[in-house]
Length: 613
Ligand SMILES: *[C@@H]1O[C@H](CO)[C@@H](O)[C@H](O)[C@H]1NC(C)=O
Ligand SMILES: *[C@@H]1O[C@H](CO)[C@@H](O)[C@H](O)[C@H]1NC(C)=O
Ligand SMILES: *[C@@H]1O[C@H](CO)[C@@H](O)[C@H](O)[C@H]1NC(C)=O
Picture (cartoon, helix red, strand yellow):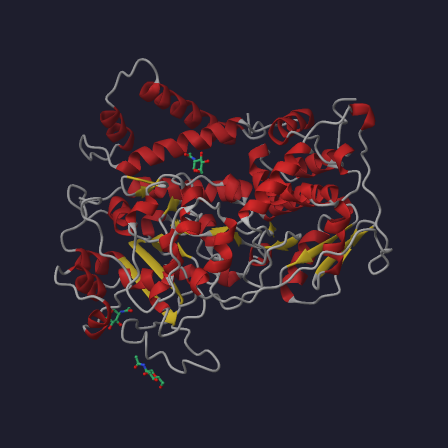
C-alpha cells in the first residue's frame, strides 16, 4: 500500500478506501442491498431526504477514481520499473534508479500515472531526429544548459532564473542537455492535428523493449555550449505567427472532424455571445462537469471561441506550427509545449500562494464565495470584452445583472447595453437546475463577494479609458490571499493564461471551484470532485454548485457544509503529499531524463534495466 511509514497515514487512507470499496461493491455489485438513493443520503448524513443530487454521484465516482489511483502506488524500485514498462511500453530511462532513490528520499507518492503529462508532451518527439531536437534547443533564444552535472543560463529573465534555481536542485542527477524556455505567458507551439497524429504513429513504432544485453545505460556527453560541431541534415526553419485571433491558430490542433474545425469562425465579438448547451454534453451530466479533463479541451466546444479571452485576442502571440521542444509553465490542450511547474509555484510567491491564512479553521470562515482579480484574459476592447471569461463571471455574480438577464423581457444586444445590462452571459437554465433559489439576485448578493480590482483598459495606443466596461463593473480594493481564505468557497477563473493562485487555493482550507482551459504539470494527480470542485467554462453550473454547498435552494436550505469541508480538506491534505516543491523536483527530474533520452542518437536502445540483469 501507499504509506507504510506512518500508521496514522495508513489508517487515514486504507480504512476510508476499504469503506469506499465496500460502498461501491454494494452499489454496483450483484447484491444491491440498498437503494442507491438511500445509501447516498445516509452516507451524507445530513438529512436531505430520499432524492439524490447529481453531484452526490459525481463525488462517489471521484472517491472510487482516487482509491483506484492510490491502489497503484509502488514502493520498491523493481515495482516502479515494472509499472513503468507496463504503462510506457519502453524501458525506463537511464538514471531511473537514481530518480527512484530521489523520489523515495523526498517521500514522494509513486504512482506511475502521475507522470502521464510528461509522456503526452514528449511522445511526438520520438518521431523527430534526435539531432534536430538538440539543434532546435540549443539555437533557441532563451535556454538553460546542463553540462557535467551543472546547470547554467545566459539569460537573466526572471522566469528563467526561477527555473534555473529549480533545476539546480537536481543538477547533479542530470545528463548533459539544452532546454529551450518560453519567456511569454502564452504557449508557443500548435502543430496541426494531422501532423501530430502522424508523429504519434511514428513514435509508436519506436516503442519497444530492447533486449537487456543490448541496452545502453549511459547518456551521451554534449560539447560545451556554443561549440556544437555542424551536423548533417538541414536546419529546420521555424516561422513565428503573430495572428492575434488565436482561435484561428489554436483550432488546427483539433481533429479535422472536430466541432472546432468544422464550426464557422466567429469574427464579431461586439454582441452577446452564443452560449451553446449542446457542446457541453460530452463532459457534463445533469448540469455538472463529469469529465473534467474533457471539459478543459475546446475541440468539441466551438462556442468557447467567443467565450475566452485567450482565443479572441491574447496580449501577445508568437506561435509556430512546427514541433520544437519549448518548455513552459502552462498550455492549452492543443499546444505541444513541454510543461514544467510554473515559476510562481516554485517561488511560492505570497501574492499567488498566500501561505498566511491557509489554515484558517473551516467553522470560522464566512459561508460565502469570494473572488478578486484583474480584468485580464487578453486584450479587452470595447468591441470584444463580452467574450472574456472574467467579465462574464463577475457579471454573473452581480444581482443587478442577473435581474436584467433573467427578466423574460430581457433586452438583447445594444438595447440591453442601453438598459444597463452587461449582456455577456446566459441566465441559468432552471430546468437543469430545478432547486435554485427563487430569488436568485437576492441570494447571489448574500452568498458571493465578487468584483474586479482593475478593469485593465489602459492599453497604450488605444482605448484610453474604461468607458466601455465601467458602466457594468465597479472595481474595488484588492484583498490579500489571507483575507480571501476567510471565505469557504474560492472560485478560480483563468486570466491571461492559467490562474497562478490554484496551488495556493488547493493548499488552503477553503474549497476551490475551478474552471480552466489550461493544462499544468500536476493535472494527472488531482481528482475533480475529490480534491476540488470542477466548473464548466461557461459557468452555467456555478449557481447550482454554490447552492449545493451553501444551501438556500428549494429543499436544500442548509446546504451541504460538511461535504464542502470534506473536499476542501482532502484537497489540502493531498496537496501536502503530492504538490510540494519536492514533488516538482521529482517531476522535473523524471521529465528531464526522458527529454535527454529522446534527444540522444541511441535513444531506441537506451534504458535502465538494473532490475532485469
Ligand atoms: C473523459 O473523456 C476522455 C476523452 O473523450 C476519455 O478518453 C475519458 O475516458 C473520459 N473519462 C471518463 C472518466 O469518462
Ligand atoms: C469611450 O471613449 C472613446 C474615446 O474618448 C470614445 O470614442 C467612445 O465613443 C467612448 N465609448 C463609450 C461607450 O462611451
Ligand atoms: C453591478 O452591475 C451594475 C449595473 O450594471 C453596476 O452599476 C455595478 O457597478 C456592478 N457591480 C459590480 C460590483 O461590478
